[in-house]
Length: 57
Length: 416
Image (cartoon, rainbow over all chains, first blue to last red; front, side, top):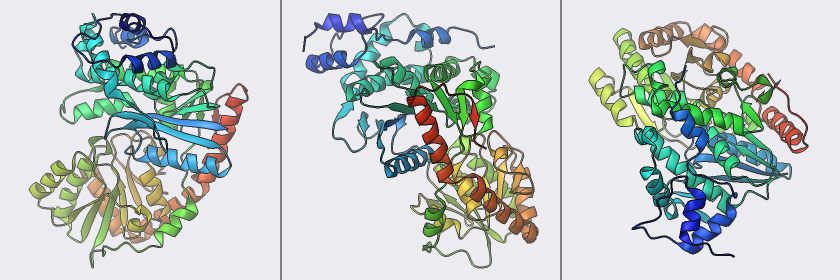
């Protein structure tokens, strides 16, 4: 398994990456998780975020 | 076939949906298919597949998700604690689903729209994805909120972030799936009203295992029926959406007219203490018994003279079907999916939803008309025997799976 640096993980998953400042992170687990997720996986889900700012008529 | 039944919610405490998943899994396994059931364990907040030891603990990733969402420029999301909680948690859920593995299945059958949205986001293969809509998430969220804000109207709720969030999850759950399975016309029409084409929906009513039901009903329930009194019964969750509070108020009205009855409330839920308190205030705590959960519902139903389904919203309550199969005269609220199960005056009576005085009058009427009560009880039993058999549900669901796996374009279908 190719180990990613923490910043690679956050930059890949989060649209607005903040990192893990002050948090304990299991990097081996995170790398396994990265391999299980699609390459274009992104948080937050843009479709849902867009719906939140639309008016419901 | 290798099938995954998956829910975003807790796998062990989801009432009728759990029954549905277990029935479907058992029927599929009996025919030699491999079935896994995936969901959340509320005890340790893990995502898991029943029968497997490997678990994905959300705590390993959830703080990171929350932290990153919290600092993101998403003020609308931050304004709703409900939306923020579900949104963070469901990312942990979908990561868990991907971590546990989805590649080995021929078809994935999501049991709620959140699960469908999540699975689609992490699927890396072209596995067919079916979603069942067992209810309306947004409307249930509305009713939950209305339980504490009684003046709240649907049009106001649906424009809140909480309301928009649930509606968006429902819509994208329907869009994400290759096909949608519903049990009632009501829920089907709700989905198509959002612009989802009818051709994407198939309606297959829930089924009951008839022989198992009657065999279990033969086992005597240990608690004696009150002597010389008529027994009203409700079975289900004690939650606002189920309308048990309406039944309690109706019993208060009825008690002013007559005292020849008792009521057994079978089930548990967050409203229990509130309902018990209300019974004391109404002076009916001596005739309303909170039985709790029972393992053999067909057995306890044998004691009942009348069954009430007071839901404010329900798609196709399993508990009502069971009461009808037991031959008990039933009264249900005239709302959402319930009128599809009760033909007024033929297979039951319908009362105006959320109107305890109306419910009280209907109970009074059936107690005074034992011949009518017996007739509608028997007619409802015959209707269930004809239209709600588990083997029909299994047959039609299996046919749908086969079509989807075979790559056949699945058009709109209705089996009833």
